[in-house]
Each structure stands twice: as structure tokens, then as C-alpha cells.
Picture 1 (cartoon, one colour):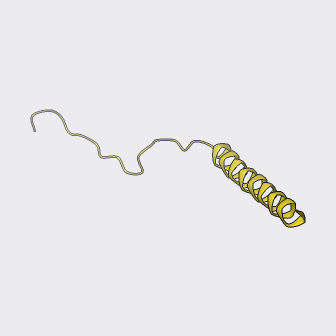
Picture 2: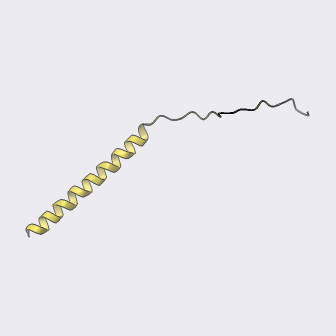
Length: 50
């Protein structure tokens, strides 16, 4: 019976750690600021018909 309780406790602790790590990673990814969508290179367009 002790081994069953130890296995259940270990499983619960492992699940809680996995959930906490996943939640933390998602929170960190969500905390990064949005990058502006501006091109690094822009080409001037000439007048139409040239």
C-alpha cells in the first residue's frame, strides 16, 4: 500500500511540475512584445508607364 501511495504522489507531483512548466513557457511567450511589421528594404517605384 505504501508503494501505491508513493507512486500516486510521485505522479501527481510530476503532473503538477509539467503543468507549471508549460504554463510558465506560455506566459513567457505571451510576454514578448509584438514586432513591427515593417520591411527592412523598400524599393521606390517609378512613375507609371516607364
